[in-house]
Amino acid sequence: MKVGILKEPKDEARVAMLPEAVKTLISWGTEVCVESGAGQSAYADDDAYRSTGAEIKQRAEVLTESDMICGIQALPLEEISKMKPDAVLLGQMGALFNPELTKFLLEQKRTAFSMELVPRTTRAQSMDVLSSMATVLGYKATLLAANSLPRFFPMFMTAAGSITPARVLVIGAGVAGLQAIATAKRLGATVFAFDVRQAAKEEVLSIGAKFIDVAGATEDKAAGGYAVEQSADFIQRQKDTIHEHAQKADIIITTAQIPGRKAPLLVEERTVHAMKAGSVIVDLAASSGGNCALTQADQTININGVRIIGVGNLAAELPQDASKMYGKNYLNFLKLIIKDGAINLNFEDDIVLGTCVCHAGEPKNSRIAEMIKQ
Ligand code: NAD
Image (tube, protein in one colour):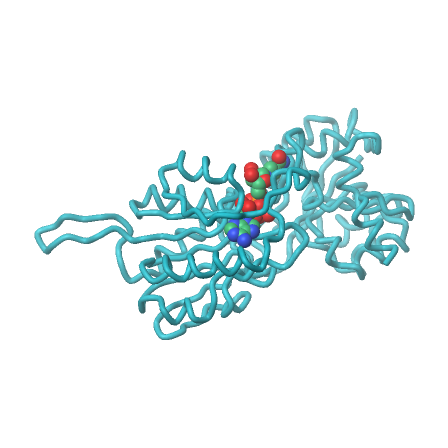
């Protein structure tokens, strides 16, 4: 059985597996072929892959010879057509939001796994690429903000006077938010955060930030630890509280998301206008609509001296460690579908079933099946 690793598109510096992950895969009795240059942007050259025992091939050969292809971004449809009929395709293909791709995979009777569908259960944690990439995003968001800020982060007492620490407000304290808080704390900022989940409050306090309470949040145990949509009254009170805190903040990092829905709008236009010139907003929810009313995805805009960074593919800006984490998540998932060097799909396993877009012309993930019915 041969696993193929392709070079990602031009705007993507990560690679699905670095040589260290490929080495482990080969030790399980599989062959691996890697497209020439696949790891280049993540600082892994062809020789590093060769030294693991992998073959270096041209793209067309990897596509046509592999029994399984592990990638990050979705493959173009014409390339999927070139794969062996029974080859398995894996990637973070956003299948729930990409009906054209999903329908194509079904029509072609392909077997495909979309890594963002990995169930968010304790057993699946080590395979969860969304968590890994959220860690990268939170860290990078703080560094991006620090680099853009015309001020220091830490407090300084110098002969030239004293510098007060930067004030950072983090909205949404999930995986990315907590990492943003921890990074801002390490750099010496004073950090405030808030979230609609009580569990997040404990975590925020435990890493030394201050928690802003807004009473009356809705929580739902059935949401499995995730946020649910809030009432209009609560969201308005949240917006007012953010408006008040934003005027004192140097940086706002927003990460608030609700799985499968548009991100809640929490930083209003009037709030941006009320902020100090030189302040920075980093909106990590930009791709799902943004938490700030003025955010433009993949762009940095300047509103009266307040810069709003609508973050694009920030994970690709830390390609080495992001690829290392991706590869580890992949290996943990592949352990479930590779046995004795061969593909072995056990749909009795909830992780295999939940991550599978389709197999033999049938949708497997329940949300994909619902989407197809509509
Ligand atoms: P996410 O990216 O869906 O959302 C980010 C944060 O935004 C969440 O903390 C959410 O509560 C918050 N949020 C949503 N609406 C908000 C609002 N109106 N105001 C303020 N905050 C708002 O979430 P995530 O970071 O992926 O994870 C959230 C939780 O799930 C965490 O507790 C995390 O530990 C847990 N988790 C578990 C697993 C697993 O068990 N495999 C994997 C990932 C995350």
